[in-house]
Image (cartoon, rainbow, N blue to C red; front, side, top):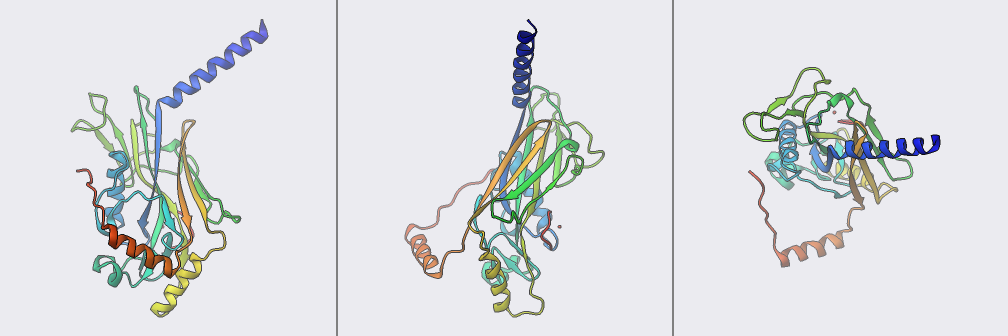
Length: 276
């Protein structure tokens, strides 16, 4: 009888655990953000990421401030720099346009949305992040423990209004105050990491060589995985990082794009090897 009671208790706990997990859904979206330690566009990118995650993780905004979900990148694209660059290219104002001229690289971020259902509430004080890379050195490993996140412009809590649903003028946005405030949802630009390239007083050629040397990291290809957890629920996003194509491969790709044309789609209306 005692064994049967233990078995029944275990089964009940399993059911309750499954039910609890069903009440919270975590969505993680990888994207390349401007370097938060130097970019004049970072605040805009942050706002676009929050808006994009609030709308299901869709691309939002344009230019350096754009939030564009992107899981597949080259090793050069996930590098921040101590000199102007963007997506692995130096002299970004000339390559991408004047709005990019003062950018200092792009950092891999894991945007996040956490949504409760059936009245389930939670607080950002219980949110944690564990990130690792699958290269032999796990060089991009970092994380934040529960209690280290706060509400703000980059991590917005939402309390639903009388209708109990996201959307409408009755919602309350939580951007300040104690991180223990209970909310119905959290939408965030996410934390991130990247390899840093420095080359003080160097020529453009030397700066590009510095990026290229980092991009030739011997652990490539590898994955960079970020997992958020809150109240026993977790959700992950993954960057698939590949080697930079050889010049000949780039030429073939460009020819292919020229033949196929560009496909347009509609959109809905801190400088260190450290986390941001």
